[in-house]
Image (tube, rainbow, N blue to C red):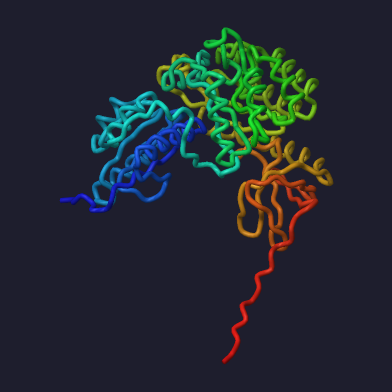
Length: 449
């Protein structure tokens, strides 16, 4: 029979999935800290809160395995309580309660007050935008809206996150000021769809106005845009990007596919021609913009001809950044009514082919950067290298700039002018134009008696 641990309660928050989950975990931790709770992120604790992802098969499997791992630790007396929250819990709560009953309780994506109550804490409404960040001190995610109103056939996010709900501009500015006070210099704007921002509150797409307010926040040097939707893209955002140096020349815009027939089935509201024109307009208005996209291969009905069209288009567009996923057949989505007729091995082969093409494109684009100088932020030190990023690179998913740290010293979170000296597929190598030499450690001389 297991016995309760005698350790003082420490709450360990474990985060799985996307940046939206990271943000939610940080809000939870901020609430717990305000309640004088001892809370840590992915460290040892006798009370565990798992913030799950339920987006696609691999993410769901990782979430379930993590739950089972901590339930086992609970059975062995290593932890006392296990709570589960997030997207998987929102989507499959009844099934999870039946299959994994040893979890103390399950909470959905909108049940933060209930989760806090279970953790013997009160929900503090006055903590507007205040949270315990888990990212490196120089950047933080800023979630500008929750939920999604898009009808994409393959996506289960509206089932887990509900409809689109924008956060008012004044609240986001206040949150940005709080982050800047704590040393954050880069804001990464996230939502299920940034371009929908403001339609519910201001009756218009208002992302440009939000950016114009955020650039005024003292201490913020970079503002980066993640997760835009191609249909109805507000072009005034590009004018702000072009005019305001704080807004990075960077856009993450998942396009999913290019074949018009498949785009129609995916319910994306666009065509091959419209998508290509949009990208060319981006390049014309902001020529130096780095465009990141994600694609899906193996969607129901994707023929070899459809895939060849996608490959040729990727070669033509020469995206600076690109990720590729295999289609996941998700219950209660519109596409679930279609036959999942592309074998898994074919899906994987197609994804590999796309990434092989992109690897070559990335290598060629990186070669062109050799000899150029870029403003680079230093995220961390890893081995003998300082690891940084240009404005054209987002954390975790994009290129990194590696700087030999054996003879120089660079401060984490600071910006430096870095000249690129070499380049690989997804890494750049550089040296500072101006940097302090590495401090020499003086030997302490002990006077003999």
